[in-house]
Structures are given as structure tokens and as C-alpha cells.
Image (cartoon, rainbow, N blue to C red; front, side, top):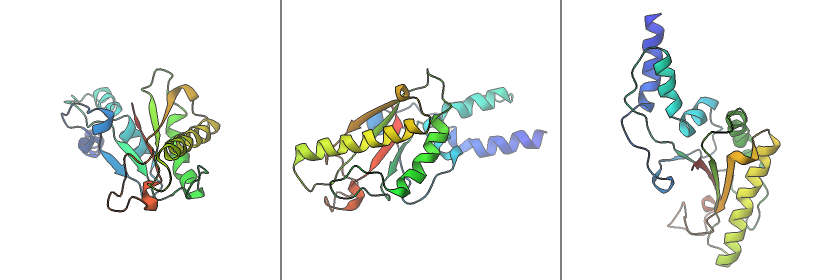
Length: 179
């Protein structure tokens, strides 16, 4: 029994460091690339404070936790000028839907941020990035996530993932994070 608690603590320890949560703009970015994340990875990334609750339930003291992360999903690149969700992105989003579909209504809001590369007009890129975020929200709500849990925003080409190549496909992406 004691070994079980020690093992659980060892698995959760990397999540539990005494930091204050940074603002959305400063949050740690986890680049998923082409990986489909595990449910626990998404849950602990978006809701790290729940690891503290788990420790407390098991009689341990929690001294703090890592801030929530921002998941960047660039591998499933959107086609140029398109907000259609690629099949690879849908596989990744299915995991997010699994985590988010059971969240209580008072959960912290989740932000879906769309991005574009630098090709095209800045105002069109802004609209396109917003449409990408809306497409993700629509997909997640079709999978059972409450629409009130999700906020969408578009950044256009303002926050490039690959600043050395503003036209790179990696810049056509979405990010999912806590507000």
C-alpha cells in the first residue's frame, strides 16, 4: 500500500513544483508534433492542480504545481488558405475531447488559438486563423465538449512557430490552452 502511494507520488512529482501559474502568453508550450497525446498528458497539462488534489486525497501535502501548458499542434498542418481539419489533427483532438467532455461547467475556460503563416494579406490571415480555431471548437463540441468551456481566438501570422521561415507549414497550426 505504501509503495503504491510512493509510486503515485513519483509519477506526479514532476508536475508538482512550487511555481505560480504564468499568464496565458507566458505558459510553457508543449509541441505535440505528430504524436497523439495520452489522455493523462492532456489532463495533467491543462489541469495540473488536480494532481495536488489527488495527493491530498492520499494523505500527502502538496507544495504547489506546475502551471498549465499550451499544447501546440503543428504537425497536422492546415493546407494553405484552408480551415479544414486534417485527419491527423482530428486524431489528436479526439484525446482533448475525451478529457474535456467530462469537465464540470465551472472548469477554467479552454482557449483554442488559430494561427496562419505569413503568406497572404494580414487581414485575411487574421480571419483564416479565427476560422481554424472555430473549426476546432466545432469538432470538439461535436465530440461532446460543452461549447461554454471553449473560447476561440485567431492570431493571424503574429505568433509564428518558425520565425526563420514565415511561410513554413508549421506556422499553420492551432494551440489549446487554459485561459
